[in-house]
Amino acid sequence: MSRAPNGWMPALPKSGPKNGKPHYLAIADAIAEDIRAGRLAAGDRLPPQRALAERLSLNFTTVARGYNEAQRRGLIASRVGFGTFVPEGAPAAAGTPPRAARKGLVDMTMNLPPELEDQALLARMRQGLADLGEDLPALLRYQEFGGSEEDRQAGVEWLARRGLTAPRERLLVTPGSHSALLAVLDTVAKAGDVVLAEALTYPGIRALAAQRGLHLLGMPMDEFGLTLEGFEEACRTRRPKALYLNPTLQNPTTATIPVERRRAIAEIARRHDVAIIEDDAYGLLPESGPDAFASLAPEMTFHICGLAKSLGAGLRIAYLVVPDARRIWPVTASLRAATVMASPLTAALATRWIGDGTGDAVLAAIREESRVRRRLAAEILPLGSFRTGPEAFHLWMELPSDWSRSGFVTTMRSSGIGVVASDAFAITNPPPEAVRVCLGGLLNRDETRFALEQIAHALEQSPAMAAALI
Image (cartoon, rainbow, N blue to C red; front, side):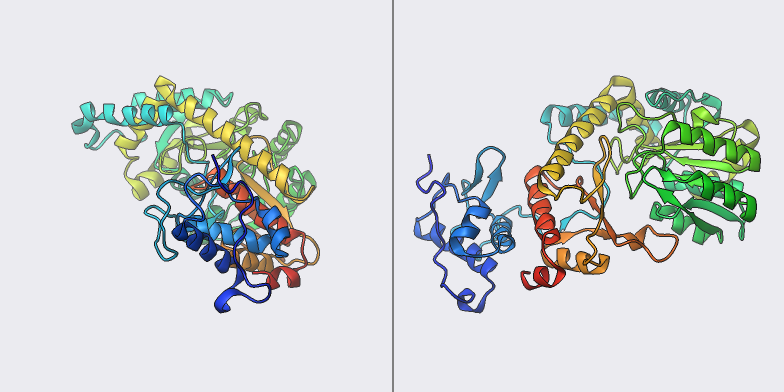
């Protein structure tokens, strides 16, 4: 099989970067040169990164960056269970770019579900899209506002998987969660009114509140999310119109509010006549999660279930359940003015996938891949360095005391990895020294492993030492 099983050594000088280049580039160039000279051939395996770092008396990060650069050029590949190897068709010259190399950062900034690699499932999804072609003329017309009867029924069925009984007459099909949030805010509050949210919250609600001139007030949190004492005090002293929550696998902290606390929050909201805006973006990811607020307090909860995190970010459809018939009209008026209607073609695709079981299969695949990514994080990152939740595909990392969030983000970016500082989520100041790390999106497992190893190594160093190694 391999003519160089883990015994390969790059010809690097014993001191100083080769030709004035950083060591990591010298490692990538040495791989290219050995492929060109025939010393490395397709199928040959390279040593594990830590083993090569020890042989060369280099830092692990330097070798990892060298392998990453070589992989970017298409010189090497990695496969779970086999290691790092020279693939068929590797370019023979250092300057030859791969035909399909991914460029730029290893992007862990966008909170997206892992992309599917199951070819049978992908074919099933494509077939669902192709089947819509038979109805294309009708799907290109203006449709009934709020979704067709079939689309609304699909929303009712999808929410039933969440344990939520949603009356079809109070369910609206909207073009994504943002449009639903905007319509709800327009309904419950006017410029100058107070809306509550957790101190760390989804950035979208910050932008929408600012756009509408609302005063968004950050509430105290603990490991389970919103605290009862802080909410009660704000209701008593600030007279808020609404409370915004992302209560399951919260973005960014991954906190999930337990059901007993949800009941207590609902009771406080009832006493003070505060509407609850439940952004349940991640609610379907756990196979067994707490009851939705819309089940516990249906008369006061605006429930929003977008499909971006459970089926795919490009499927811009969300189901909005309005608490009573009286508020259907103002919500509808705001939605109609801002969006006209949800795309009939997109809504029809969601309806088809929900009806034929494709949606369940996609959700199950995202759950399983998220479990794999979380296991990688647990295996690689220092114990206690992050928090996450069941079936979550993001991590919340509170940094060691010697790291600042800006310094850590800069260091990781210099290593080719993008993470998000807590500033993006903070309503109150100062933001904590923390970052959010996404494990999904375009990253495959090998790229995820590489990025996590880089993050782990940075956490194990002082900021000064880490900066010296990039």
